[in-house]
Image (cartoon, rainbow, N blue to C red):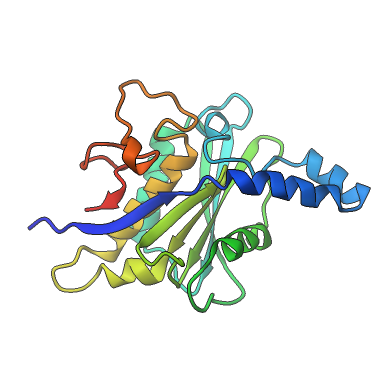
Length: 226
């Protein structure tokens, strides 16, 4: 039996936020501004870092930091992500690090909280030969209840465990790790530049009606979970 869950795997551009964040930075003291200018830009649009993530031209190593807010990915999910990174990225080393966040998020996560938690949870910085991707895994829903995960900055994604658990692990439902890993890999695909948002398409397959998603319902980058 093929079960279809019309739950979105989303890409949020947040292009409006980049300008606002820059204006906020200008109001800080000069020492803080200088430090931020020296760091790798982490508030750019999705797809901005596609080449840095995929190639070894500048960064030969990658760390995926998963901050867990009351929910943890299944071991099978970690295996799936690690295999994906090793197979798709031209890196000499890819690592997944699980960190426990200080507290769970109560109630739906809105866009403001999404961005503020991304900034607060980062304990590792992109520097030298290592690029860092930050993921916050919330035991909560997004403010749009049909969303399972989002990619919202160039090295930032988030997943919503409350909704993932709701549609998995029960009778006639797929295993939780299967839905979980699909959402993880889908959102990672977005920051890798798929579909047509930083990485050129070899064959035209964009589902323009659903943004930067694939028009093939068997594809990882399809807009809904099946």
